[in-house]
Length: 291
Image (tube, rainbow, N blue to C red; front, top):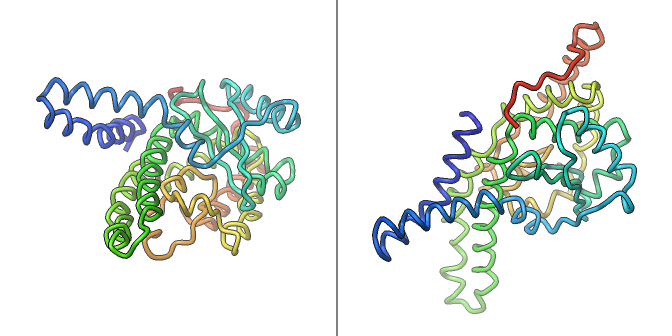
């Protein structure tokens, strides 16, 4: 499925309840109006919703000069506007990019990622995220993460408001009912093929496939150990945004699998590094994607 079809499908899913409400209230005109307004709001505000859900804080050249310089350099190489950069106070290492358009992209890194990786590995991870922007993957993934995150937040609000046994009787199954819908949004927004393609294009952008493979290998303890990405566990729809799959796939979380196995990504990158070492890798970044 192309990114355009993914985006249209996700906007349709988001707008459908508003259309039904409008039809119930007054007919076709209110229904169409509410559907269009809901789709427009989802398009414009999907990134702020994701950033708010994950409690990201923006950094600038004063607080993170070296990081911002690296981001600006990669943006120049990719031919993109420099994105805003945010940091999550999260021990588990990961990164993602969110936004509705390339000019309004927001790059998000966890503090654990910044502490774990060396400069070449961090540059490779950033290049992977720029590849998602170049490929047009960012918008459908952001829509899925925002819509799924809001549904998860609604379920959590139900749990929090369940202050007696009777309330708990209806609040407890709420997430079980919402999980398949959230999983559907995630499946539309992300796919294993998109991650392989972003790995290849990102490795081409940074010029160092081995560094990206090394970064994936370095992330393994943080992703699989006891310090699993807690915020992604709270909002699993956002897991498909991440550079590395942050969730332990148990129970309902298996529904949210969109990343290929880490070992397969590492193997593909090291094969690409071997080709580059042989001198047959392209020297110029190809950009056959809409921005």
